[in-house]
Length: 164
Image (cartoon, rainbow, N blue to C red):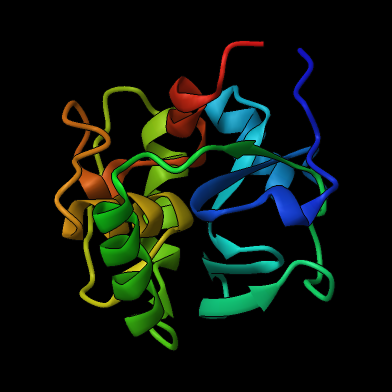
């Protein structure tokens, strides 16, 4: 499977989604369990600036200085200008909130044990997929009407990739 790797960050617009692939280290576990090449998703604020939920919590990062995971593809913003503004504004207001490690473990267990459904939601803590889906939901756009927001994982965003 081949994806367009985005290397020119000037192409990124506010509200775009960055879908990371070519996992290394422990991120390979996510790709193995979900059977998807995608292990992380982040929300662009335009140019090099992104906001994302990582193990240290919700962070505002610069793609030029960000540690780990440099290979990603772009999904164009999924809403109107007003929805994008509302999503990015809400996302920025969450900087400093925690990472939902329990939710990440639950995602792995759900995939590994098909008949087991673990869903433990902790307020103000997010997995990366949940964070991006929640940002758009807070803006009035339900990206995944068929999936509970806390169950969204990076692989789910592949449905929004432009046709290649």
